[in-house]
Image (cartoon, rainbow, N blue to C red; front, side, top):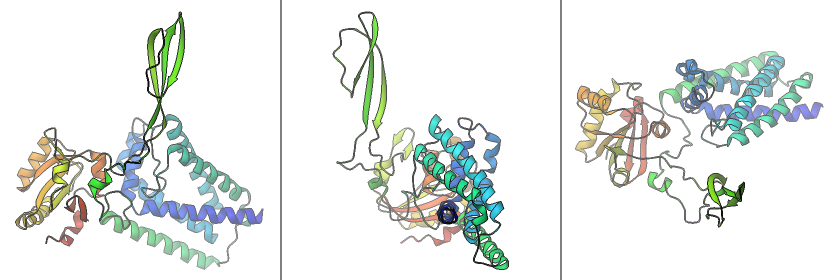
Length: 365
Protein backbone atom coordinates (compact mmCIF):
# COMPACT_ATOMS: atom_id res chain seq x y z
CA UNK A 1 0.00 0.00 0.00
CA UNK A 2 2.86 2.33 0.84
CA UNK A 3 4.31 2.06 -2.69
CA UNK A 4 0.88 2.35 -4.38
CA UNK A 5 0.21 5.55 -2.41
CA UNK A 6 3.66 6.86 -3.33
CA UNK A 7 3.09 6.26 -7.05
CA UNK A 8 -0.42 7.74 -6.90
CA UNK A 9 0.95 10.76 -5.06
CA UNK A 10 3.49 11.50 -7.81
CA UNK A 11 1.00 11.04 -10.67
CA UNK A 12 -1.75 13.15 -9.05
CA UNK A 13 0.65 15.87 -7.87
CA UNK A 14 2.34 16.27 -11.24
CA UNK A 15 -0.95 16.20 -13.16
CA UNK A 16 -2.51 18.85 -10.93
CA UNK A 17 0.53 21.10 -11.29
CA UNK A 18 0.62 20.71 -15.09
CA UNK A 19 -3.12 21.14 -15.51
CA UNK A 20 -3.22 24.13 -13.17
CA UNK A 21 -0.17 25.83 -14.66
CA UNK A 22 -1.47 25.51 -18.24
CA UNK A 23 -4.69 27.24 -17.17
CA UNK A 24 -2.72 29.74 -15.05
CA UNK A 25 -0.90 30.69 -18.25
CA UNK A 26 -4.29 31.79 -19.65
CA UNK A 27 -6.76 32.48 -16.81
CA UNK A 28 -8.92 34.66 -19.08
CA UNK A 29 -9.40 31.73 -21.45
CA UNK A 30 -10.39 29.51 -18.52
CA UNK A 31 -12.86 32.19 -17.36
CA UNK A 32 -14.52 32.04 -20.80
CA UNK A 33 -14.89 28.28 -20.33
CA UNK A 34 -16.45 28.82 -16.89
CA UNK A 35 -18.94 31.22 -18.50
CA UNK A 36 -20.04 28.34 -20.72
CA UNK A 37 -20.64 26.12 -17.71
CA UNK A 38 -22.52 28.84 -15.80
CA UNK A 39 -24.71 29.79 -18.79
CA UNK A 40 -28.46 29.13 -18.76
CA UNK A 41 -28.09 26.33 -21.30
CA UNK A 42 -25.71 24.30 -19.10
CA UNK A 43 -25.75 24.65 -15.29
CA UNK A 44 -28.10 27.65 -15.33
CA UNK A 45 -26.04 29.66 -12.82
CA UNK A 46 -25.85 33.04 -14.58
CA UNK A 47 -25.33 34.94 -11.31
CA UNK A 48 -21.77 33.53 -11.23
CA UNK A 49 -20.88 34.89 -14.69
CA UNK A 50 -19.67 38.35 -13.52
CA UNK A 51 -17.20 36.62 -11.20
CA UNK A 52 -15.79 34.05 -13.62
CA UNK A 53 -12.34 35.66 -13.87
CA UNK A 54 -11.91 35.78 -10.08
CA UNK A 55 -13.15 32.18 -9.78
CA UNK A 56 -10.81 31.16 -12.61
CA UNK A 57 -7.74 32.65 -10.91
CA UNK A 58 -8.62 31.09 -7.54
CA UNK A 59 -9.29 27.62 -9.01
CA UNK A 60 -6.12 27.41 -11.11
CA UNK A 61 -3.84 28.67 -8.31
CA UNK A 62 -5.52 26.32 -5.83
CA UNK A 63 -5.03 23.45 -8.29
CA UNK A 64 -1.31 24.16 -8.61
CA UNK A 65 -0.92 24.58 -4.86
CA UNK A 66 -2.63 21.26 -4.12
CA UNK A 67 -0.20 19.54 -6.47
CA UNK A 68 2.78 21.17 -4.78
CA UNK A 69 1.47 20.47 -1.26
CA UNK A 70 0.83 16.83 -2.11
CA UNK A 71 4.33 16.30 -3.48
CA UNK A 72 6.08 17.92 -0.50
CA UNK A 73 3.70 16.36 2.03
CA UNK A 74 2.43 19.63 3.52
CA UNK A 75 -0.90 19.52 5.41
CA UNK A 76 -1.62 16.04 4.04
CA UNK A 77 -5.10 15.71 5.55
CA UNK A 78 -6.30 19.09 4.19
CA UNK A 79 -4.65 18.43 0.82
CA UNK A 80 -6.18 14.99 0.29
CA UNK A 81 -9.65 16.13 1.39
CA UNK A 82 -9.42 19.11 -0.99
CA UNK A 83 -8.26 16.89 -3.87
CA UNK A 84 -11.11 14.47 -3.23
CA UNK A 85 -13.79 17.17 -3.14
CA UNK A 86 -12.39 18.88 -6.21
CA UNK A 87 -12.17 15.70 -8.31
CA UNK A 88 -15.68 14.61 -7.29
CA UNK A 89 -17.01 17.98 -8.47
CA UNK A 90 -15.00 17.87 -11.72
CA UNK A 91 -16.09 14.28 -12.39
CA UNK A 92 -19.74 15.29 -12.04
CA UNK A 93 -19.13 18.29 -14.32
CA UNK A 94 -17.42 16.30 -17.08
CA UNK A 95 -20.04 13.53 -16.92
CA UNK A 96 -22.81 16.12 -17.18
CA UNK A 97 -21.08 17.75 -20.17
CA UNK A 98 -20.47 14.42 -21.90
CA UNK A 99 -23.86 12.83 -21.26
CA UNK A 100 -25.90 15.89 -22.20
CA UNK A 101 -23.35 17.14 -24.79
CA UNK A 102 -23.37 20.60 -23.24
CA UNK A 103 -19.72 21.72 -23.36
CA UNK A 104 -17.61 20.12 -26.09
CA UNK A 105 -14.25 20.89 -24.43
CA UNK A 106 -13.89 20.94 -20.64
CA UNK A 107 -10.82 23.19 -20.75
CA UNK A 108 -9.00 20.86 -18.33
CA UNK A 109 -5.67 21.55 -20.05
CA UNK A 110 -6.61 24.89 -21.62
CA UNK A 111 -5.83 25.13 -25.32
CA UNK A 112 -2.72 22.95 -24.97
CA UNK A 113 -4.49 19.58 -25.00
CA UNK A 114 -8.03 19.28 -26.36
CA UNK A 115 -10.11 16.51 -24.83
CA UNK A 116 -13.56 15.36 -25.86
CA UNK A 117 -16.19 15.32 -23.08
CA UNK A 118 -15.95 11.54 -22.67
CA UNK A 119 -12.12 11.66 -22.67
CA UNK A 120 -12.32 14.31 -19.93
CA UNK A 121 -14.70 12.15 -17.91
CA UNK A 122 -12.43 9.10 -18.29
CA UNK A 123 -9.44 11.16 -17.16
CA UNK A 124 -11.35 12.31 -14.08
CA UNK A 125 -12.42 8.74 -13.24
CA UNK A 126 -8.75 7.64 -13.29
CA UNK A 127 -7.80 10.60 -11.08
CA UNK A 128 -10.71 9.84 -8.75
CA UNK A 129 -9.43 6.28 -8.25
CA UNK A 130 -5.90 7.54 -7.55
CA UNK A 131 -7.13 10.19 -5.10
CA UNK A 132 -9.32 7.63 -3.28
CA UNK A 133 -6.15 5.54 -2.89
CA UNK A 134 -4.41 8.61 -1.43
CA UNK A 135 -7.34 9.23 0.89
CA UNK A 136 -7.34 5.66 2.19
CA UNK A 137 -3.57 5.59 2.60
CA UNK A 138 -3.00 9.19 3.71
CA UNK A 139 -0.99 7.97 6.73
CA UNK A 140 1.72 6.96 4.23
CA UNK A 141 2.06 10.51 2.86
CA UNK A 142 5.32 11.52 4.50
CA UNK A 143 7.83 14.23 3.66
CA UNK A 144 11.61 14.45 3.46
CA UNK A 145 11.35 18.15 4.38
CA UNK A 146 11.02 19.67 7.84
CA UNK A 147 7.91 21.70 8.84
CA UNK A 148 9.54 25.10 8.24
CA UNK A 149 10.94 24.06 4.85
CA UNK A 150 7.51 22.86 3.73
CA UNK A 151 5.97 26.18 4.74
CA UNK A 152 8.64 28.14 2.87
CA UNK A 153 8.19 26.05 -0.31
CA UNK A 154 4.41 26.47 -0.13
CA UNK A 155 4.63 30.25 0.35
CA UNK A 156 7.17 30.59 -2.50
CA UNK A 157 4.92 28.55 -4.81
CA UNK A 158 1.91 30.70 -3.88
CA UNK A 159 3.82 33.96 -4.47
CA UNK A 160 5.14 32.73 -7.82
CA UNK A 161 1.61 31.76 -8.91
CA UNK A 162 0.31 35.19 -7.91
CA UNK A 163 3.10 37.03 -9.75
CA UNK A 164 2.64 34.90 -12.86
CA UNK A 165 -1.15 35.39 -12.84
CA UNK A 166 -0.72 39.14 -12.50
CA UNK A 167 1.70 39.21 -15.45
CA UNK A 168 -0.47 37.26 -17.90
CA UNK A 169 -3.57 39.25 -16.92
CA UNK A 170 -1.81 42.54 -17.68
CA UNK A 171 -0.08 41.36 -20.81
CA UNK A 172 -0.75 38.15 -22.78
CA UNK A 173 -0.18 34.43 -22.09
CA UNK A 174 3.54 33.67 -21.99
CA UNK A 175 3.00 30.51 -24.05
CA UNK A 176 0.33 30.80 -26.75
CA UNK A 177 -1.27 27.42 -27.55
CA UNK A 178 -3.93 28.87 -29.84
CA UNK A 179 -3.90 28.79 -33.67
CA UNK A 180 -3.50 32.59 -33.71
CA UNK A 181 -0.05 32.65 -32.14
CA UNK A 182 2.72 34.85 -33.50
CA UNK A 183 4.15 33.25 -36.65
CA UNK A 184 0.93 31.46 -37.59
CA UNK A 185 -0.66 32.05 -40.99
CA UNK A 186 -4.43 32.40 -40.69
CA UNK A 187 -5.17 31.34 -44.25
CA UNK A 188 -3.06 28.19 -43.90
CA UNK A 189 -4.77 27.47 -40.58
CA UNK A 190 -8.13 27.42 -42.38
CA UNK A 191 -6.95 24.96 -45.04
CA UNK A 192 -7.95 21.32 -45.26
CA UNK A 193 -5.29 18.84 -46.55
CA UNK A 194 -6.31 16.75 -49.55
CA UNK A 195 -5.77 13.50 -47.64
CA UNK A 196 -7.63 14.71 -44.54
CA UNK A 197 -10.22 12.25 -43.19
CA UNK A 198 -13.77 13.13 -44.15
CA UNK A 199 -16.82 12.88 -41.94
CA UNK A 200 -18.82 9.66 -42.32
CA UNK A 201 -22.54 9.72 -41.64
CA UNK A 202 -25.01 6.91 -41.17
CA UNK A 203 -28.60 7.40 -42.30
CA UNK A 204 -31.48 5.47 -40.76
CA UNK A 205 -34.41 5.64 -43.20
CA UNK A 206 -37.87 4.85 -41.91
CA UNK A 207 -40.43 3.49 -44.40
CA UNK A 208 -43.89 2.06 -44.04
CA UNK A 209 -43.80 -1.24 -45.89
CA UNK A 210 -46.92 -3.39 -46.11
CA UNK A 211 -48.43 -1.43 -43.23
CA UNK A 212 -45.41 -1.82 -40.90
CA UNK A 213 -42.55 0.59 -40.08
CA UNK A 214 -39.12 -0.63 -41.21
CA UNK A 215 -35.67 0.94 -40.83
CA UNK A 216 -33.07 0.81 -43.64
CA UNK A 217 -29.53 1.98 -42.83
CA UNK A 218 -27.19 3.43 -45.49
CA UNK A 219 -24.21 5.77 -45.58
CA UNK A 220 -25.91 8.32 -47.79
CA UNK A 221 -27.67 6.59 -50.67
CA UNK A 222 -31.42 6.72 -50.80
CA UNK A 223 -32.56 3.10 -50.29
CA UNK A 224 -34.47 1.30 -53.01
CA UNK A 225 -37.55 0.44 -51.02
CA UNK A 226 -41.10 -0.11 -52.19
CA UNK A 227 -42.94 1.71 -49.46
CA UNK A 228 -43.94 5.08 -48.06
CA UNK A 229 -41.06 7.26 -46.79
CA UNK A 230 -41.67 8.51 -43.23
CA UNK A 231 -38.47 9.94 -41.76
CA UNK A 232 -34.66 9.79 -41.71
CA UNK A 233 -32.20 10.13 -38.81
CA UNK A 234 -28.57 11.10 -39.41
CA UNK A 235 -25.72 10.00 -37.13
CA UNK A 236 -22.07 11.02 -37.47
CA UNK A 237 -20.08 7.82 -36.95
CA UNK A 238 -16.67 9.30 -37.80
CA UNK A 239 -15.64 12.92 -37.40
CA UNK A 240 -13.95 14.58 -40.31
CA UNK A 241 -10.84 16.76 -40.16
CA UNK A 242 -11.46 20.15 -38.61
CA UNK A 243 -8.84 22.79 -39.42
CA UNK A 244 -7.30 24.67 -36.46
CA UNK A 245 -9.01 27.85 -37.68
CA UNK A 246 -12.55 27.12 -38.85
CA UNK A 247 -14.65 30.10 -37.81
CA UNK A 248 -12.66 33.14 -38.95
CA UNK A 249 -14.40 35.73 -41.13
CA UNK A 250 -14.09 39.48 -41.65
CA UNK A 251 -17.46 40.82 -42.75
CA UNK A 252 -19.02 44.19 -43.44
CA UNK A 253 -22.64 44.74 -44.44
CA UNK A 254 -23.00 41.02 -45.08
CA UNK A 255 -20.00 40.88 -47.46
CA UNK A 256 -16.99 38.70 -46.66
CA UNK A 257 -13.61 40.45 -47.03
CA UNK A 258 -11.52 37.71 -45.41
CA UNK A 259 -9.59 36.52 -48.49
CA UNK A 260 -8.90 40.07 -49.67
CA UNK A 261 -7.65 41.40 -46.33
CA UNK A 262 -5.48 38.36 -45.61
CA UNK A 263 -3.47 39.22 -48.74
CA UNK A 264 -2.56 42.67 -47.45
CA UNK A 265 1.25 42.98 -47.09
CA UNK A 266 0.84 45.44 -44.21
CA UNK A 267 -2.25 44.99 -42.08
CA UNK A 268 -3.04 46.16 -38.56
CA UNK A 269 -6.00 44.55 -36.77
CA UNK A 270 -7.55 46.24 -33.75
CA UNK A 271 -9.55 43.51 -32.00
CA UNK A 272 -12.34 44.36 -29.53
CA UNK A 273 -14.79 41.51 -29.10
CA UNK A 274 -17.36 43.60 -27.16
CA UNK A 275 -17.10 47.40 -27.04
CA UNK A 276 -19.38 47.52 -23.99
CA UNK A 277 -16.67 45.70 -22.04
CA UNK A 278 -13.65 47.34 -23.72
CA UNK A 279 -11.29 49.70 -21.96
CA UNK A 280 -12.46 52.62 -24.09
CA UNK A 281 -9.96 55.31 -22.97
CA UNK A 282 -7.28 53.09 -24.53
CA UNK A 283 -8.64 54.00 -27.97
CA UNK A 284 -7.10 57.45 -27.52
CA UNK A 285 -3.70 55.75 -27.56
CA UNK A 286 -4.79 53.38 -30.33
CA UNK A 287 -5.73 56.46 -32.39
CA UNK A 288 -2.12 57.72 -32.21
CA UNK A 289 -0.64 54.28 -32.88
CA UNK A 290 -2.85 53.54 -35.89
CA UNK A 291 -2.45 57.02 -37.41
CA UNK A 292 1.30 56.41 -37.34
CA UNK A 293 0.81 53.00 -38.96
CA UNK A 294 -1.34 54.51 -41.73
CA UNK A 295 1.38 57.08 -42.46
CA UNK A 296 3.83 54.20 -42.91
CA UNK A 297 1.62 52.45 -45.48
CA UNK A 298 -0.32 50.04 -43.28
CA UNK A 299 -3.98 49.27 -43.80
CA UNK A 300 -5.77 49.43 -40.46
CA UNK A 301 -9.06 47.71 -39.63
CA UNK A 302 -10.97 46.95 -36.45
CA UNK A 303 -12.81 43.71 -35.75
CA UNK A 304 -15.68 43.46 -33.29
CA UNK A 305 -18.92 41.61 -32.61
CA UNK A 306 -20.57 44.86 -31.50
CA UNK A 307 -23.36 46.47 -33.50
CA UNK A 308 -23.04 49.35 -35.99
CA UNK A 309 -24.30 51.97 -33.54
CA UNK A 310 -21.64 51.10 -30.98
CA UNK A 311 -18.81 51.09 -33.52
CA UNK A 312 -20.00 54.34 -35.13
CA UNK A 313 -20.15 56.10 -31.75
CA UNK A 314 -16.64 54.91 -30.84
CA UNK A 315 -15.22 56.12 -34.16
CA UNK A 316 -16.76 59.54 -33.69
CA UNK A 317 -15.68 59.88 -30.04
CA UNK A 318 -12.02 59.11 -30.72
CA UNK A 319 -11.86 60.26 -34.39
CA UNK A 320 -10.61 56.83 -35.48
CA UNK A 321 -9.29 56.63 -39.05
CA UNK A 322 -10.22 53.00 -39.68
CA UNK A 323 -13.37 50.99 -40.34
CA UNK A 324 -14.95 48.28 -38.23
CA UNK A 325 -15.68 44.77 -39.52
CA UNK A 326 -17.81 42.09 -37.94
CA UNK A 327 -16.26 38.86 -36.62
CA UNK A 328 -17.74 36.22 -34.32
CA UNK A 329 -17.25 37.07 -30.64
CA UNK A 330 -15.83 33.65 -29.68
CA UNK A 331 -13.29 33.91 -32.50
CA UNK A 332 -12.18 37.35 -31.35
CA UNK A 333 -11.79 36.12 -27.76
CA UNK A 334 -9.58 33.32 -29.10
CA UNK A 335 -7.43 35.60 -31.26
CA UNK A 336 -6.19 37.82 -28.43
CA UNK A 337 -6.84 37.83 -24.66
CA UNK A 338 -7.19 41.58 -24.54
CA UNK A 339 -10.15 43.88 -25.15
CA UNK A 340 -8.92 45.72 -27.13
CA UNK A 341 -5.79 44.08 -28.50
CA UNK A 342 -3.74 44.78 -31.62
CA UNK A 343 -2.20 42.47 -34.24
CA UNK A 344 0.14 43.19 -37.13
CA UNK A 345 -0.08 40.84 -40.13
CA UNK A 346 1.88 40.30 -43.31
CA UNK A 347 -0.19 38.49 -45.95
CA UNK A 348 -2.12 36.60 -43.29
CA UNK A 349 0.88 35.77 -41.09
CA UNK A 350 0.74 37.19 -37.56
CA UNK A 351 3.94 39.14 -36.95
CA UNK A 352 3.05 40.99 -33.76
CA UNK A 353 0.30 40.69 -31.14
CA UNK A 354 0.02 42.85 -28.05
CA UNK A 355 -2.21 43.60 -25.06
CA UNK A 356 -3.49 47.18 -24.92
CA UNK A 357 -1.03 47.81 -22.07
CA UNK A 358 1.87 46.99 -24.43
CA UNK A 359 0.94 49.18 -27.41
CA UNK A 360 4.29 50.96 -27.21
CA UNK A 361 6.00 47.67 -28.15
CA UNK A 362 4.47 47.71 -31.65
CA UNK A 363 6.91 48.34 -34.48
CA UNK A 364 5.87 49.65 -37.92
CA UNK A 365 8.59 49.39 -40.54
